[in-house]
Length: 280
Image 1 (tube, rainbow, N blue to C red):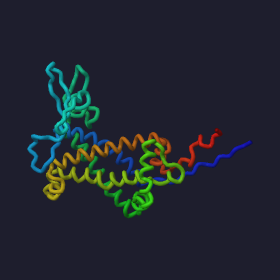
Image 2: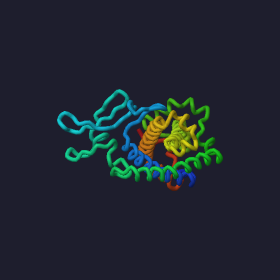
Image 3: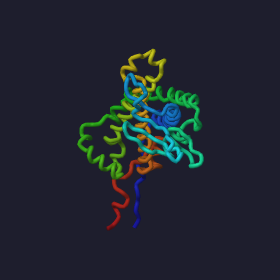
Image 4: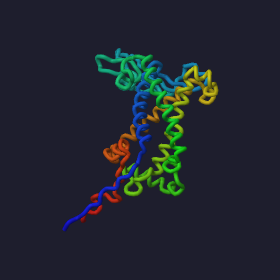
């Protein structure tokens, strides 16, 4: 007895502009994050307040010398202190330890080089910011925001189920896989319209030149030091999103997801798992 199988359905998931924007931004974000850590290492402390006197940091990463003469990496968060030797504060082997907030492998460039780190950071930022503005305009003007990202009323009723399915690594199949679910929509809206613009605006607030041109930035973000702290937190949120996004791409179908972001073509998973139709 012969069996026939239907050819998989192939849909166009991402337009060329979206794909180009995605990959350029991947490179920009990596450069921004690594060069940003190089810049942070020059003064590894964060503060709150318009008139901060640098005496009560909200976060600091440094090192102390223990009673036995050993260097220990210390991270302070508010009133709490953590030993982070080998990760933050002090890195390297036991025989060749280096005092620096973030280790060399995580910064751009690797060696201590603040001037070069700033140049890399500004280069990537001046590519990243205009492309974000262009992409947001494309979403709004082209109708993609309304069609693909704005949640619909009926989707809110299934938010709990969507959260549980994601926690159990159960991803949409069939017709549902053609569209973003509510959790994806909310995440992308948060990243595109809040976190990323905050990164750009707080970055501008740390520039004396921009403060002279737009003094309202200092009032908006509560001073340059508060803007620096917010910049760090938003960048950390982008890093967390980046890591989770990559992990979900891996577990939900690496080849299919990568093909959709390279060629635009995507094969929605069938409604049923292959083993669902097996005899029991």
